[in-house]
Length: 377
Ligand SMILES: [Zn+2]
Image 1: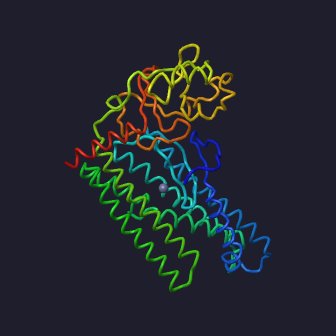
Image 2 (image 1 turned 90 degrees about the vertical axis):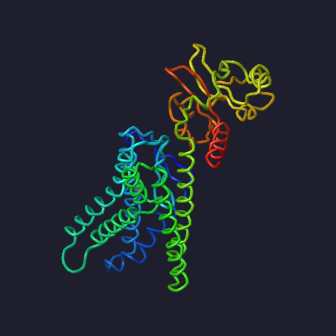
Image 3 (image 1 turned 135 degrees about the horizontal axis):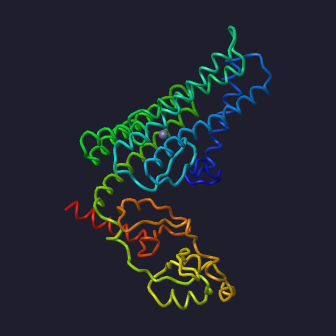
């Protein structure tokens, strides 16, 4: 579910979507325009149904975004680092780059998502009732009532207590709150999630085989399959978090990494830094000695040999705002799932504005292997 198109920032949160979202929007507009709206509000020209279908699809996507924004804004206010929101085939995903140690906080920012959908649904319903006069609702009322129905369905579906749905996370938060055992809570919610996913797959197959519903059947199977793998990775994530608990960034980082000035040429960087050391990435500093970015081997390799003498590395470094940073005292679990991007998954460790270390994805996987191994023994 990679982001293909960025929509900029809303309330300080990065928002984007994956192409698969357009498939959903087209399917919604098509089914509204060709069947749902004509039967709910008959006697209109087909252009009117299509206009209403397209507008509904757009408003539905905006409602989906409102659901995710509610999660992200409340999480951010509670001190969780929010990376951004991606809308895609199965709705929205809020990506957090840090974790919370408070089950109450997690319960709160989880609950506000479905709550937003339910409130939006109720508002659309109320407007649709006031817009409909007489026996036959007009097109506007039928459209609003569909928006009410779909938002309430979304809110209710998300409250099913199965990981990775919001309801599953809510259940996990509540068990965690009651027992203090986060891993056990994760396991229970993940198991229920897997059971629910199997049910959804069975339901999808049944509607396909017995009712001949191709789109609905296939979609349920896909959604079930997606939920199944997500529930599995939640459980695995729980185990990993447990294995790494109590370990801080300081314990894992490579201290005082070699820094390269960013005003030297690619040639000088290759000979003076890359070939002269066993490292493949170098934090860079500007003329004033301030941390300015991260130079990777991949970026150096991308420069054509004839341009190496004239290209400065400041023009090819991964800029600081695209590199994940952490404090030495942060829990190392914060670094799980650092985005690859131009930093190739590296995290720079900064203390009071000063670079003190670096962590690469292989540092984390090595630590993980050790920790999981020693936990298993
Ligand atoms: Zn949600």
